[in-house]
Length: 202
Image (tube, rainbow, N blue to C red):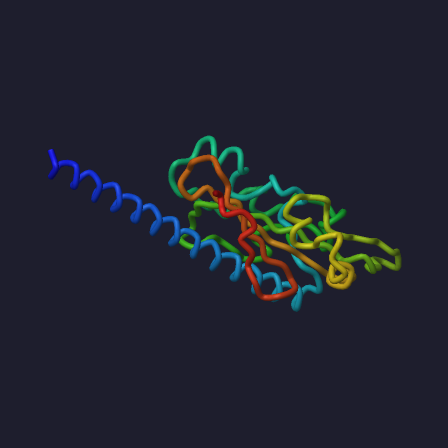
């Protein structure tokens, strides 16, 4: 009985360590994806003069919504670079979507998560800024009133007005690494170099 008890304790420790290592590896992947996404946003802006938006809502993520991820998926979610959800080709110009048609979406960024599958869902929202003038008309595009946007661009922070005066973007990932329904959330923005783990899913 003593031996069985010891084996049980060791198995519990081993399983806990394994789960922690798997979670850590998946976290490393999403940080790499967001770093890559930031580089691609900057490349698009230097080429086309604006950042890219894939969703104007933090629940409008790709490849599925957070609710679908936590409710239906127990494996990594495949990325299929086809269809309007990826290309946003039918989205017309409007708030957060400036540039036209095929310049919206993940295809404009030429971005696919590592391994073409992910344990997270992704989104990025951009705007021309509070001082934007488009076609000779003043168009103020400040960050939306969404939870992650509020953390990236806090209203009470004096720096927020400066970094959103002109072109801005933020990208985010919502992850359910161990499929327990509790989301980890990560963000990165056009300013600064850090990828922020805003909610460790704990």
